[in-house]
Each structure stands twice: as C-alpha cells, then as structure tokens.
Length: 636
Image (tube, rainbow, N blue to C red):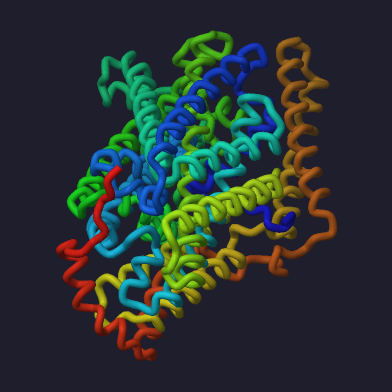
C-alpha cells in the first residue's frame, strides 16, 4: 500500500479528500478553546439527521421502501436529493479551494460537473425510471440474460462504490479528527456507524431526506457567506472582481505560480492573470480525458442511477434532473464568490498553511466573515460549514453503501441465487445484512488507508463508471443489436482498461522521480540557506536579522521535509506495478477506456447471438418511451 501513494490529480474532487490529510499535520483551523463549539454544532446536525432516520424507519417495511423509498419521492424532493448526492465534500470544499488558489481554472470544474447532468437528463433519467426497478442490474437484465447481466452489474457497482467510498471515508475521518480532535481511527468508525444507522434503519427514505436536509443547509450557508463577502462591494460583480485583481495577496500568488514569466508584468497584470485560464489546467488532452470521465461517469454512478427509481413517474424523473441542475448550477456560481472571497480575504499563503490542497478555503472564509479565529461567531460559522461538509460525506457514503448492498442482496442473492423467489421480508433482511458487510469493509479499508493519498480511487470510480457502466446502459437502451455478449465483454474490458491505465499512469508514485524532485528541493534549500546566512552575517539591523533567521528556519524545515520524504522511500525504485516511470502519460484514462468500453459492447454484441435480447427490444422501446408497465409507487 505504501507504494500506492499518488502524486495527486488536478481535479477538485481528487484534491479535496487526499489533501485533507495535511490538515491533521498542520495543527488545524480551530483553537482548543473553541473545539467544544465545533463538537456541539457537529452534534446538533448529527442529531437532526438521526431524528429523520428515526421517522423514516417507521416507513421502511418492504423491499421497495428500502431500495427506492416506495417510489414516493416527488420530482422536486428528488432534485434536492440528487443535488445532495452530487454536492459532495469534494465538490464543495474542493471547488472553492481550487478557485482560491488558481482562480479561473478552478471555476472550470464547476462547468464540467454541471454539463454532466445534461447527459443524465437527455439520455438516462426517464428511460431508467421506466425500465429499472431498484438497481443498475435491473436495467441491464430487462432484455439481456438476467443472471449474467445482474452478476456483471453487481460486480461493477461494488467496485465503483468501494473506490469512491474509501476516499470519502478517509476524508471524513481526517475532517473530524482535525476539527473535533478525536483519533483518526475513532473518526472513521464514527463515520461508518452513522452511515450504517442511516441505511440499516431508514434505507432509501432516510438517505433521501438526509441528502435533502444537507443540500438545503449547504446552499443556505453558501448564500449567507456570499452575501457577506459581496456586500462590501455594493453587490457589484465588476467591483468585486476588480478588488480581486488589485489585491497584493492575489498578485503574489500568481507570481509564484508563473515564476519567471512574472518578471516583466505589472501588479495589475498579475491580478488580471488570476481571472484568466492556464494557472492550473495546462494539458488540454489530459483535461479532455478528465472531462469525459466526469461527464460520462456521472451517468454511470450506481448511487445516482438509483435515485431515478425513487420517483413515481417518468415526468418526476425529468423534473428531478431539472431541479438538480438548477440547484447544482446555482451552487457552483456561489463557489465563484467563495473561492475569490477566500483568495481576497484569507490569501493563498494562509489557506495552504492549513491545507495544501486549499480545501479549507470555504470554512476559513466563514471564520473570517464571522469575526476571525479568536471570535465566537467566527468559529461558529467555521464549525457550521465544516459540520455540513461532514454530513455531506456521511450522506454520500450512505448512498454508496445502499447501492453496494442493493447489488449484493437484490442482484446476486435474490436475482442469481434465489432465482427471483424471495419474500419481501427475506429481501429486506438480506439488504440489511449486506449493508452491514459493506459498512464493515468500508470502515476497515478506511482505517487501513490512514495517511495514504487516495486520489486515484476517486479517479478510478468515475473512470470505471464511464468506461464500464455507461456504455452498457446506453447501448442496452438505444441499440437494437445490443445483447448479453456485448454487456459482459464491455463491462469486463471497460473496467479492466480503466484500472490498468491508472496503475501505469502518472497518478502512481514513482520513487525515482520522487527522490529526484526532493533532491532538487534540498539543493535549492541549501543555496537559499547559504545566501541567507551570508546576508545575516553582514546585517546590522535587528529587524532584518529576525527576517533572515525566519527565512533560514523555513528553508531548513523544507529541507528536512524533503529528506524525510526520501528516507521514507528507502531502497524502493519502482511503483506498485514495478515501473520506474509511467507507461501511460495521461492522468485520467477516460480518453482511451471509454471508447474501448463502447467498442467492446458493440463487438461482443455482433459476435454473440442472443434471441431474448432481440425479442425484448420492441417491449423495451415502448416501455422506455411511454412508461407503460413501469414499476409504480407503493402505498404507505
């Protein structure tokens, strides 16, 4: 596992969770005398969600209620719940952080995630609602061999969920440890117990309402912060952006990012550069690949697909996507103010001092707007924003556990082992047992991943979903010749290709490259120490002497960190899979693995004869377009 530490991937969702690991080593953002306040706010929000779970538990009696909330969720409610699923801690903390550190390029991720839901709206939402029942496997099994389709779908669902779930567990554990002050292992167990409580007792009903509550709190808190940030500029957008351009902290940040190119630029030009592209996104091919995985992977994420089974009609499915797009789009506009507000009021230096990935930009801005690090209101604001982020993590993890448990119980146990012959009580019992198994696995993996950079797992989750799940769902729904052979081949090759390409990509740790980078950093530090020492010997002004001493201390600290990084690698020379350097240069495999997934579904379908798939095409075509005979809502 040690070798699997990655160098990070330049995407908000990939930066958000792993970089929070740095929080635990930084001393945190909350002073000890205010941690009781943080603990209280966390407790209040957890208590609210547990009360909702208690109410939901009274309604969960059947498999339909456990898996799909009895198909009783309205379009508007489901739109808020989808927004809750999508506005994870990665997007909430990560987007604001990226904008605060890289300006315009950070905001481009918001655009990419919003575009993803156009794909969901146009091609996925309504047909899946009409065809499916509880899981991804139900959609694929409608016209293909049920046992083969459900087995492959269940494996893919569990793989995608475990990848994404592990990253969320690590992020949640570190967030709680840093802000509340309890051990990482205890934090992960607490996240796991809370998540299991939502799923075991409340099923999809509780998970849906927790997501709605969290989304409302998140959007409300963000609107308040934006109003406080924007008010000093008379709610003028040009005035606000001009203040960003003219801020010395922003100008210094841009100068540090572009290096020598800043030499001939005026302060105003440096500030203007913050609002232009190119500070973070420098490889267009890699960004296209990442964009494909994000846009298409969203439509293949199992916990997102399950959301469309909770509404009573196809119209509600469409309404829910429109509401989700409006909420998500509106929220991402708010991140423009949150990120730039943090850059303006906090500064990149102070933000990265707490968290190198910038993920504490939003909470630190809240603390600043409330009165600062020493004020009660400031720490209340910070605690509230952080608690909502924590609730976000737990709710997203609950959705992923529900998706995995549904795949195990409904697809494998009921569909494959029992041949669809199980009572409602047996199926609900199987779902709860599966939830416990998945929850325990998630806790154990989360604890085992302590101190690890798990960015590549999030990349893998989206890449596998886009390369394995989406081609199968899309071609099953829209291509008459698609059949079981294509589904099996496409899922296997799509998933293996995505995983294999990530294992040989720059995302993995290559010890020789790490050693070279740190040796260079040591040399730079030695040179700076030598120069500062010479200047110190010649300096007579006490203030100048103090400044030089601090500079020497900072360089010695940087040198020690680089030496420590080299020492940790020991004699290692190769990556997890035995490579000294990457074989595949792109950080995200989507550009290769997604077309390959589609190609394999087509080839497998053309080479395999499946009479059932052909005979069921007309029924699928009518049902996906009209909703006739689709699963109906159940009475409570």
